[in-house]
Length: 187
Image (cartoon, rainbow, N blue to C red; front, side, top):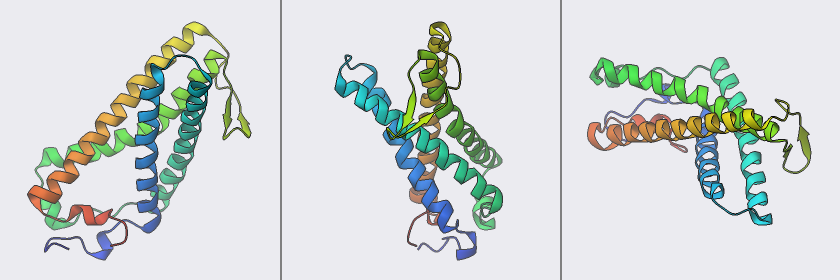
């Protein structure tokens, strides 16, 4: 740990850390898979990957519900005073805005994907076992609109994830303030 590393009381709880990293991996994987399958020709392999993408989306949605519930029950620790004192006001605002927007998109992206599938008339059957209800009635025009919303929201989420990672790298390598230790597993 660096000299400025957060104290144990300023670390996130173990459930928050596990949910953070599980969502991070899920979001990156689902995004990569969504981009990959978009241009594939229709085939059994594409349909299989699309279903995996849907399963990942529903899982991300459920993990987001659990993460939000945990966050409401167990609020995150405040930034350590010594770190917050060194952050310009715009960075503090960006820190909070990025987190709030990411939380919003944790829900918007999978719900839009689910609504798109419903509007296209394709069922969502979680892990091929649990059929989920349609969110909207089949409608081709609505499906195209929702598809755009899903794509824009997904790219916005990935952009925010990139901004989040860039901020972590800045804190770790430039500021050397140990901020990453608050969310690092096993420390």
